[in-house]
Image 1 (tube, helix red, strand yellow):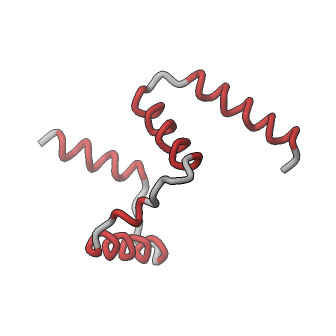
Image 2 (spheres, one colour):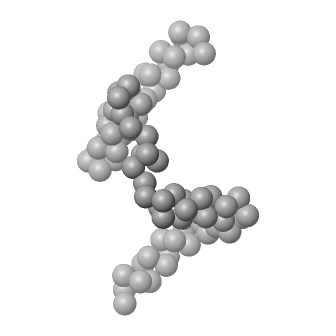
Length: 84
């Protein structure tokens, strides 16, 4: 990517961030950018237990097998559970 494209991308990202009003999303962005720019940051996988790693691998396998549901389905189920 050349310098002009990088600058255009930065500008677009800045504009999008400036429009955000959700504190949670802004915190998530801050944490993500900090993780990518800090050379001493640990990989989150290094902090997982063996059981968590196994569950993550199983989830990846399920997704690879097409065993997924849409976000809309998740939201509908959550709304149903919360209304009980």
